[in-house]
Length: 157
Image (tube, rainbow, N blue to C red; front, side, top):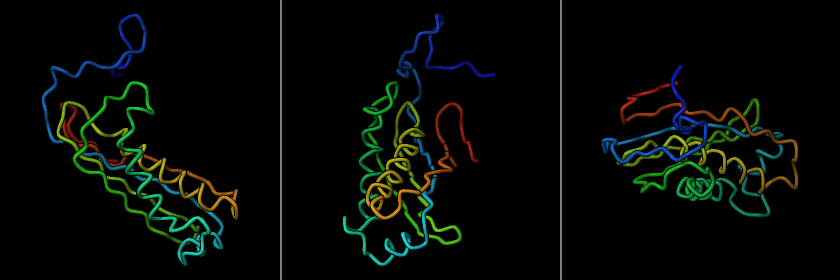
């Protein structure tokens, strides 16, 4: 089993020292979804949500969240991100919004947490914008689907 890098030899949490790591191109892609009642999805698709364009606002929220991941997750490094993009698509059966985030940087540590944070906050934003009509929405299946760059190489789910 791999050693947990966020704990020192005494078991205390610490921020990993990446100063000796090679600078490489890094990419991470994460996905997730939020399921809802069909009527709620129709409201989103038709642009009838009282708070505005749900998918556009959620996309911006996800981008902003990726840039602030180090403020939200205690042991994440602040990173200079070179790309953050979110793709939000609606789908039926079950009614849902599917969220895909791609994050890139050139640096000494990966961007997996930034991609996962982007997806999570985008889903939470969808929830917030339409919760007045559907409190039964379920955010789920958030996962890393691709990570590349650095010493550990490529991971694909």
